[in-house]
Image (cartoon, rainbow, N blue to C red; front, side):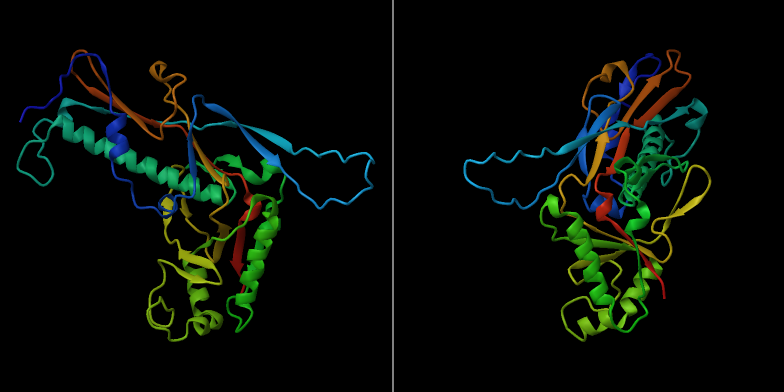
Length: 337
């Protein structure tokens, strides 16, 4: 079957559609749909955060001077959307005489291109997952360990104020402590509406200690028809005191050569999932004259064929920033047995 491609044209072919249709690599944060995406037309944006306050009015005598409304103060935070671009070349020797994996047929340029674009796309997906997870923690970081956005610093908050200890080995008291943590988040969100959905992402050690706790086991007892820590593997999630607990195990290899645990050993992160605008992500356009001032996409890909057909260059890029605008609503829990 002849390939529907002509080489040696010296033209750029856009493959943004195909790269965005490649299935996402499995990832928990992305599948939870926590982040609200926005396409922007420039590589810099202004994030407006209103410091809104409400209070109870006192009464006053009729015909006395009216009260003056105290206006909310909007804080403007400039953001530079990070840029990642990856390129690769396909040469004749990458295809000539090579068998396509799993077949007896010779490989084709289109197969090699698709395989390499797929790998880049999966790396982008994992990078975005890492951005989202680190944003939840309040400090968006990249694969070099560089901080892209620190929510605490931007909003003048002290991160240590939102770090809590809990002893999961105690026989009683864990249930009431979890409820108290929820109250703290609800109190911090008084001006942002009612919070009703909570999730807690746990490291394996935190999750194991949690499911072994007497409060948890007693609450479930021997009930039939529901996930039960006395009988079942609950790592995919269970509810207790209005909180959905999920284990998020594993680690990722960063470009700087280090390995980062998804959730730090013995820790967990408790936060609401129904606060509008709390988690945001911005997509900037491709760094190409053809895309100037156009709404950004999460991923782009294109190829350029050498006019003399000696090579084929493929490029892909992503210009994205994931941020947490309400870091005070995320509590880092540490098991201190």
